[in-house]
Each structure stands twice: as C-alpha cells, then as structure tokens.
Amino acid sequence: MKKYVLSLAVMSALLLVTTNTQAQSWGDLFKKENIEKVVNAVTGNTTIEMTGTWTYTGSAIEFESDNFLQKAGGAAAASLAETKLNEQLAKVGIKDGQVSFTFNADSTFTSTVGKRTMSGTYSYDSTDKTVHLKYFKLLNLNAKVNCTSSTMELLFNSDKLLKLITFISSKSSSTTLKTISSLADSYDGMMLGFALKK
Image 1 (cartoon, helix red, strand yellow):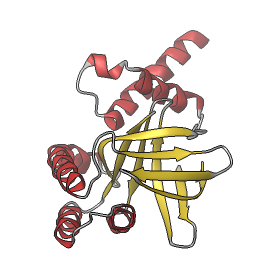
Image 2 (tube, helix red, strand yellow):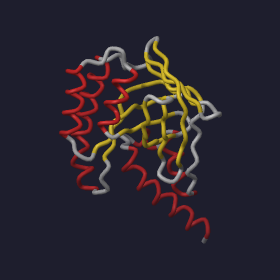
Image 3 (cartoon, one colour):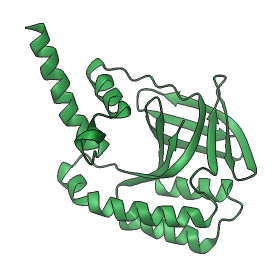
Image 4 (cartoon, helix red, strand yellow):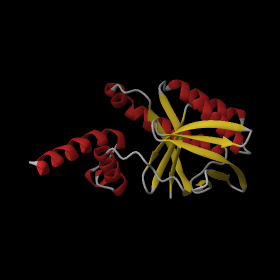
C-alpha cells in the first residue's frame, strides 16, 4: 500500500512539475534536472546549492501569475519574448558563455561580463526561493531562483533587470534598455532574467 501511495505521489508531482519545466518531449521530461524537481517537490526539499561558477546560456522568462490559462496562452508569447530578450542582451555584451556568476560558500559573489568583474555579497531565502544580491553599496537586488545541480535561473522584475544590465554592462545603450523595458511592459506579470549552467 505504501508503494502505491508513493508511486501515486511521484506521478502527481511529475504531472505538476511538467507545467513548470515546459518539457518539449518525453526525453526532456526525464532529464536529470527535471527529475530533481520532482524529487524535491515530493520530499519538500527546498535547499539549493548555489556555490560554484554559473555561466550564462540565455535569457530566462517566467510568468508570475498562477492562472493556468494565462500561462498556457502566454507560452507562445514567452518564446517570442525570450528570443527578443536574447537579441537585446547580446547588444549590450551579455552573450552565451561571456557572462558568469560565481557564488562562494562565504556569501560573497562575483559577476563577470567580458573583462569586467563586480563583487558583492548574497543571501538566500529558502522560504520564498529568492536570493538577495548586494553589489556592496552600489546596488541591491532580489531575484527568484530556480536551481538544480547543473542549471539555475535568476529571475528579476523587469525594472530590476534593467538596473542590473545598466550596472554590469559597459555597453548598455538607452535604445536597447528602452526595447527591453517595452518588452517587459508588453507582457504584464512576467519575470525576466538569466539562464545559467554550472
């Protein structure tokens, strides 16, 4: 009986998590990071391991709304928005493999864009799965964290992402920032950020 209940719980969690992982095929569904999400959902494990160096692989987008129909209707819009965001981030020097975040065990971190490196401190709040980034006395930001052992998403409210891009990129242009801002305004209830891998 216990095995049946556990199997039912795992399958239920798997079905729930697939709406968040946006798997494109059965193969995607059974990737290591998606299985980790299911196990964490079933066991209630909310701790994450952020330490290490995470390299930018593209933009990340997530809807804040819990309304399933809005999420489903917004999936195509999110894909288009992600493509546009990647294009705009590339214009300010935020490209695949050229940006990284290193989180140290002593709660310090560095972010690197090209040859420019900035440092600060961070703290993780497991209750709401957010990280507080503090670039010393210059900039304070909160980001939602979606993390597995090999991938991480740092998701910001659009105005905070614009502040971060302006701060870390030496090439930020007002035209690009306006484009990102209008993109964010077009999709209300969407968080924007960075997809990273270890």
